[in-house]
Image 1: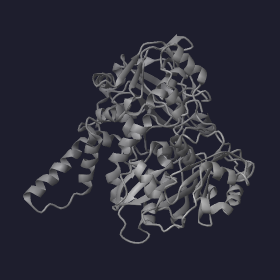
Image 2 (image 1 turned 90 degrees about the vertical axis):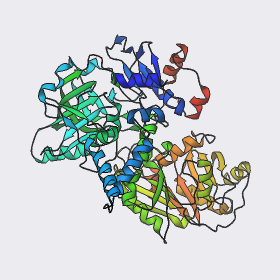
Image 3 (image 1 turned 180 degrees about the vertical axis):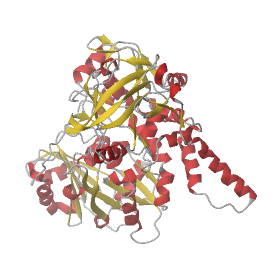
Length: 599
């Protein structure tokens, strides 16, 4: 980690903050605001972390993957180069000439670095110093309503019961005692599957080791959507062209030799505790839920260890850059199962699983639907809630100014497909945890739409107010065949009833989005974030008379919503104002408003 920090410094990507700052809210809020500066943002090294005026021995590194340049430094090359190399491997053919044979074996030879190298026991963690308890680590509490401090960049290493499979996962870990953590592995994750193996075998313990720090590429590999059974550090070796070196813990789990911290212990298979709430990457607090308890046996630290952490919440954040690397590098693998997929994009304000854009070749009717179902059945893409498909003639998927009108001019309500399937366990909109509605739009065909009579915002609001009490209204893309009307209101009835009341004015609109009055219509970036978060397609999309209504409000008894609707992650205004007074951060009112720092 120290080597990478120096690399960040040499590339002017590091900001060192020597002021004593609290690990509760202060450090996370600074990192949260810095991450919203996109390519201008930097990694932050806090040299004097404190808690209640108690100083910690170890500095804290935040926003390690601060931008594309930092990602490429971690990969040791451009992420597009890695993607191209994977693409070449997926297209290997039987060689028919001497040159082809040479190229074939050259490409295969690159895989020799993939398998991790296990070091001998005498090179285990004995060169580390012992840390007495978790209280000695500068573990952050990010949000005011978080239940406790959480480890947010822990590399969680587990193995199957027969030791034939190893896994590296990135799961949040709540501190629940001096030497106790709560393991938030979701039911779809490999760690949870191994847990079930141990449980079925009648065992009482499952060994687990957690590494923090070391080469930053470890943590990126930990979130990579590799197929089940493939150890994530194989990807590390492939990318870096050097084998990952692993050292054994006393519990039999192997971790990277250069880790800054190693926490080893076991998960108690009979012991569960309420974990959460926690302000997660969706930008909302996930509710308390029972998760397994991990008992910590030993904690090791390098003498010059740096504690690595991240902050999650409303976009954009560091996971934007990590997700970009995943998106680009794994495109060739997606294309092996969906060969007519040209490209795809996961906008960061779609929070990855909540929205994808896909460009495809269309060769026959219903081709888009075929690819929809293929993607919904592939690995982590199966968690996607909303997907928009365009053809090969569409603008570049990152050119939103051109792409959105392209889609709205091909928006045919008869090409909206609503289904059901698994969803991210953190999703709060679905009526059931872990599964819910999904929607996809086939915008690959020209659409002959009836012409609308577009009114001004004021006139349309006046018309709609004959039926509803509207707080505010704004139309977007009125030059397109299917403009979007966003309505803010204080919900007094089911949104479906409200939508039906407006159908008498259907000649003036085609798509109507309903949101709570607290939203800001001048901020489409955050509107997209809230809409795709708050929708469950089966419950919240209404299609009548060639018109579409979207219920993106917080759900309650009007929708017979049985779960508790969560609060969103907002910074403490008091903490931020104090940081401004101390000249730690700037008072950037425009940025604060743009990304709704205070809600």
